[in-house]
Image (cartoon, rainbow, N blue to C red):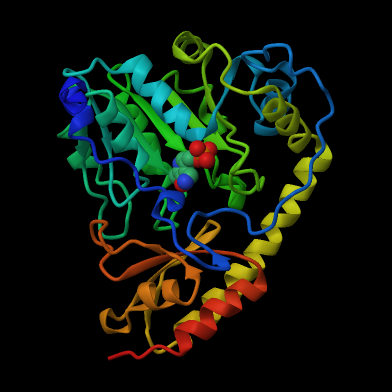
Length: 354
Ligand code: PMP
């Protein structure tokens, strides 16, 4: 019996997202998933695993709303920002009819999630400076229900121009939702558009505890939006999206002490990032280091240096971006501890350029 033939056509044809974990590798320097390099310590405060958890744990919602400067009714908590990306498609896109739009090079899960649900993926490449190509977006909005805009953008590290985001919101009014992915916003908090929710009923903001909060293994993320959008997302969410231990730890991470520790991490990583930005251009195999507002740096290396593979073989695991549009010979390096950053630089310094 051919089980594969029973599957939905779009699932048979789907190329799954190749997460850093699925790509594997063997090493002791893991700088490929934009994780925080050190493990935070938490204890569970309650022991009630016999009971189902709350669907939307009140303390997590209250604390996140206070942290983000929005109302409780404007927050949904879910299993990572990845689940929020998917909930939006499930709630707003009719398979076989509607489309999502995004601007590569950018995060891969927008496309994979849409494909899984049989929703068209429309791409409008970013301009050479990685800003939005607004006229091209305007010309491609037919049947588009959702636009994903990532700022700071993964993997390029740049922020989107706020004026462009406003124009995008104006252009989408009455037609589509605009989801601004702020997974990395803690590294440049002044750039958040959370304050715009009052102006735009169709704005959604995606957030996560996976990056600056150092909790990628917890799987906890958020969507911020006006209550009409939130209520639709709550219609399609699983009955118990967060396990009780996840809610317990998320609430602790969002206490005032937790937030203070997060800010401390952000400043340490920013110092390591500036150091890397200074020393990387001195490596012979490095052609260009792009500016970054985030916890990673995009670097263009010489083709001949074979940098990604050489470092991989030495147990220094980075993220190859060579296949992304306009990112030939580019590698994304997550900012780790200072000694991890030093290991990267030492290894790059040993590579040939030609
Ligand atoms: N958006 C972007 C831009 C990301 O880089 C990531 C993580 N790789 C996510 C969303 C998903 O984050 P989470 O771990 O919360 O699912």
